[in-house]
Image 1 (cartoon, rainbow, N blue to C red):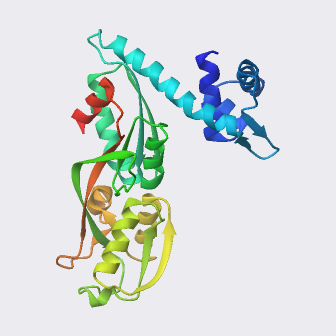
Image 2: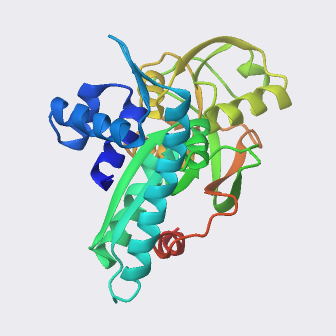
Image 3: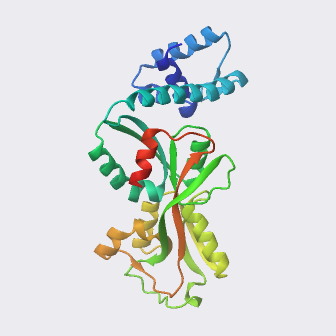
Length: 286
């Protein structure tokens, strides 16, 4: 068994599609098929079920996938152990970040880290908080950086920075909103279920008994900001995500005293897993 074949199998499971796998691995589709067939021949068992629309795992494939992730991590750990003998940090860090952290905080952190350690490589996946916590649990990423709260017993969540969420609207809006009562029956632009920002919105509405008029749900903070700027409604957003809009006057904070949400940005690690040298280095920059 070659590590390339193992990596192709892992990618195929995650992408569920031969064409996407070939593109992500920079291989031809026939080569992807050969890699999978070689593994099935070596282990004398079918690992995947092929249909015209997607790929799914056999029970043996499920077992093989979990072990494949462990083997890849063991190989990585061996690499990093050998790299520790060098002065310069190197290797790959796989990061799973929720949208607010991934789009507004992480780029600067990575830029600073890479400037000091140019031999480090990064693979960054951005999704909502629940998906990134699940990626940590399945060992698909080395570390998760999220703004929501995890209730999983398989991971450890550690805060690294405080955040504040405020209610924003378009400066062009003609609606007067000065008090809590003015918030009743407003149109809200919100994130989807599973998002850390959605958790904060739900808590705000419930704790202040705010009657919501209507909602538009977007799976992107950028889309929410654009919608609010266009006058579609109001939103609860992280101050970290609206600095440019406040600077240029395309969004404004609704100034109702004490009406905001506080939360922490946290990093997520698999419980019981030993943090690699590279992860420890990343934590220093957080």
